[in-house]
Structure formats: C-alpha cells, structure tokens
Length: 123
Image (cartoon, rainbow, N blue to C red):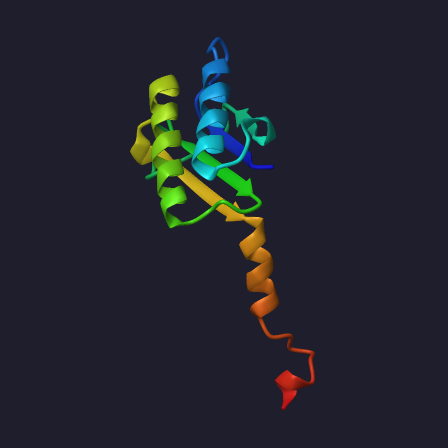
C-alpha cells in the first residue's frame, strides 16, 4: 500500500483540499502501477518549513511503497506531484522535495550488508 505524506507551510484553512487528495492518489497509483484503492494520502498544512533560507510556500513529501519504484518512476512522481501542488497551493515546483522509500529494496540492501558479528566477517 503506497503512502504519500505531504507537509507544507501553506495554511490549508479555507482551501478545498479534495482535489489534492484525488489528483495525488490517482497520480501515485498510475505512476507506480498500484490500484488507487490501496493508495493513502496524508496532507498536513501550516508546518514550519524553511527552504533556501526563507519561509515562502514550500512542501516536503515522503512516499513509501512496497515495490514499483525505479529512477524513472521517481522522476515522474516528482514532476507530477510538484505540478499538482503548484496548481492547487501555488507552491513552485522548485520548492518541493520528495523522498521516495521502497520497502522491498530496503530489505535487499539490509541483507547484502555483512554482519559484523558473523564468523565469516572475522576471518
């Protein structure tokens, strides 16, 4: 189940955020190749964020997914989600940062690291 968590310093009071939820969940599902009903989107506003030394509108997002992530998918996610935030919250795409975490590759990387307590690494 992909989960997209978006934090922004924009005050969301009085803003219709429904289009952000629907567009973001649809974009994540389409780009990653997962059913939309598995996508979770969390949006938090009025977060203290400073980017490039100022507090102009900005956003930070994290996407966690079990598979479906590669370099091109990351590029598409950054571009598409950045465009959604620009259109809906007037956040410039240059002030949007996305961290992508694939839980399936994290496990593979962990398995490949040698265990310092194993006998083979002490030889």
